[in-house]
Length: 481
Image (cartoon, rainbow, N blue to C red; front, side, top):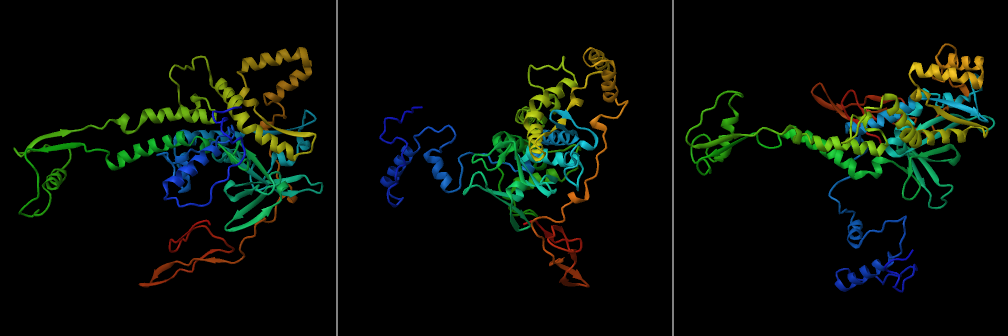
């Protein structure tokens, strides 16, 4: 692919920068800028090159955009984003995982225990919910293979918070150095024991990114518009009453308010009266004008409603599930089942369910695969279901079609949605975390008042460190490293 710079002598070869010069020299800066411009003339569809102004700002850690990237906690404070994340996480956790061997559904004791109870310390719902939550908020999730059987197959999985993991692929992209950090201690983990699930890859391919990382401007609008509405009512926004004096206000020359501004004295006198009572003014007051706040503008309703549409696009969720309807759209011919079918097929499944299924299947024997059961979203009305069972007779036979109907309707055992979850075997429980914790007891180092004197608190906070939280005796706060 040619560019407008192909007529220059530089044809993709690196350009050597001149020897260090004094940046105060305008000629030297111009020469460096010219060569930097030449050095970025190759067209690379996978790299966004900053211009000269942005390069200068980057050197000082600054940015040209006036808005800021909100934190994940700030983003989750927006109701539409919280609704989207919780809907994705809890819906994923509510689905049952099934196992297939050579394409045939496994039932009963043939189902691998790691599918039905991945984490021996949690229910399957919490395990899959936490995995989907990290995918929705941070664009990646990590599983630690805590225990393996004698054949090397995983017996238990632990969801690891992504912020505790660091990845260094500088030496080997295919076998990066994965470090698990806990409370200031770290350990390099075996690559085969750390399983990474990503929504989308980051720019360098080492980590995962999601909507909250890539759609920073849209998330910033949602956060700032909500905080504007909150601050408006917290701080008053603009005065509700305008008092116009007939003359020029200055400084009080005598009396109890000597030296004070007359405008401040007049305002205080007006405000100290009871609310909703008649007021009397003299000829010194020319007019009193009252302003009524615009509730719609004060709450940024239009912007916040539009944010729901942006969030729906970010996560691929139909607007109806976020109480948002785009102008001109209609749900007249859609019911709840059709809306959920659209979301599961076009959003939830392709973005969240399939990556989790593939990762779980990769941990099972080669002939076995794992898949979420989403039949409940496709469940039709009773009349349509029984008509479908009737049509099955011509394909499966009367007895097998009746068996399918009895299981699907709950008359006989066999529906995975109602199957009991077995406990994890004792061998699947890990004895400890791979990163050692302190074996010493933790006592509070704060101060408290005892019999009128300031004395050390020294309260026992934990039998074995570290300790995070607040001391119940003196209130000292201990934050995570």
